[in-house]
Structures are given as C-alpha cells and as structure tokens.
Image 1 (cartoon, rainbow, N blue to C red):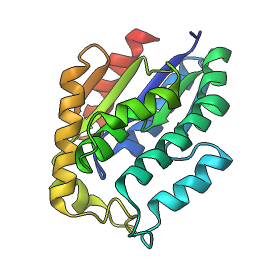
Image 2 (cartoon, rainbow, N blue to C red; image 1 turned 90 degrees about the vertical axis):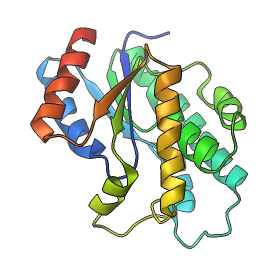
Image 3 (cartoon, one colour; image 1 turned 30 degrees about the vertical axis):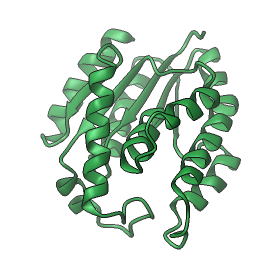
Amino acid sequence: MSKGLFISVEGPDGSGKSTQIDLLKKYIEGKGRRVTFTREPGGTPIGEKIRDIILDPENTEMASITEAMLYAASRAQHVSEVIRPALERGDVVICDRFVDSSIAYQGFGRGLGDAVATINSFAVAECVPDVTLLFKLDPTVGISRIKRAQDRLEKENLKFHQKVYEGYLEVEKANPTRVVGIDAGRDIEEIHKEIIDKIGKLL
C-alpha cells in the first residue's frame, strides 16, 4: 500500500508513551528518515474538534456507542488527510494511539465487543500499522502518574481502566506479529534501547 513505515504507539493512560515517542522520533530522524508524528483522537482540524467533544469531562451523558463512532469518525478523517498521504510520501508515521485504543477502551472498557472492530474497519480502509508498540503498565500505577487535569476517560473508575488493560493484553495476544509488548515500568533509557532495537531492524 505504501513506501513508508507506520508505527502506532498504544498503552493505558500514564504509561509513558509521550516520552518514548519523542525519543523514537529523534532516533528515526537521526537515521535520515522523515517522520510524521500525529495523535488520536485528533491529528486533523476536524479530528481535533471531535477530540474536544470526546474528552470534555462535562460530556458525562455521552452514550458508549456515540463515543465509539466519534473515535471512528476522527480516525477516518485522520487516515484520509494525514496518515495515508504521509505513507505514500515514504515517511515514517508515528501515531499516538490508533484502532487498538478503540478496541481496548470501547470494545473492552465499554463492553461494545466486536462492534468496535467493525466500525473501524470502515474508518481505516485497510490502513493498518506495520508495528504497534504496546506500553504495558498496571493501571493503578499509570493513573497515579497523571499530575495534570484528567480528561473524561482518564476520570473513569479503576474497574474501567482494568478492563481497558485486559483489552490491550487480548489485542497483543491476537496480533503477535504486529504488536510488540513493552514493559513500561522500567527506566526510560532501558525502554528506549528496547524500542530502537525493534524499530531499527524495520528501518
């Protein structure tokens, strides 16, 4: 489908994704490759407006299926406007969250099951990551790391976040050739070393 490389980065809230994404971006650029970094929900002007709706703590009445479909709508625009064109240019795309987040958060956390994968199959139109880095961290630890104001999903109870984490583990089990599990409870440099060992081979 493309000349580029598509890397998605997944994991529960507070697992340290942002720090490692910054380090990975610098490493890849140091190898002479152009990097397009983007995030979900969001990544486009339309997607960022949808993000504001999804994550607004005041939107407590939002139905689970509405949430799932808003994520998919943002993702459809994201793939069309940013991800697919970047891959066709030959960029390395690093995306902070992608379909696996919806499967974990809405499929498992909200209990919507296989409907989430079905909705998103239309949204991504066969645009699938080449590799997914899954940051694995107990949700009790992850939530305690968040020092800023929490968004609507971060404010959910521990039971919800535990279901989400179980969902991620199921995603890893179901996709052993794509998903690389990363122990996110270790030292920053140790984690970075493991990541560049994996990604370096793909580059």
